[in-house]
Length: 88
Image (cartoon, one colour):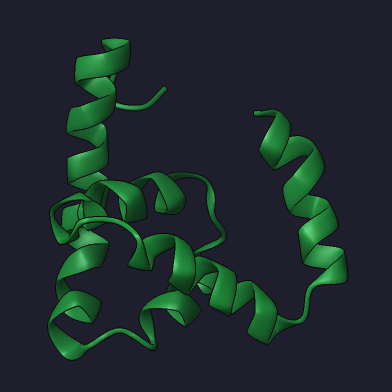
């Protein structure tokens, strides 16, 4: 919560769109493929839908089509297991 409240607004003000995109790509690039739907679902939970569209616009066709449906479901299942609710 502190990261979202303090760090992300600073990053959004001081990073160029290209730097912000590279940061996201490098962050997701370090994850095993199996964890990508969960990570994207977490991002999608709190992110602006336009930002998600921009992010997926650079993805290959299949993930671009599937992830908007798969990722939120994977995250909801994870949140239910961890928090007892479909979203924290």
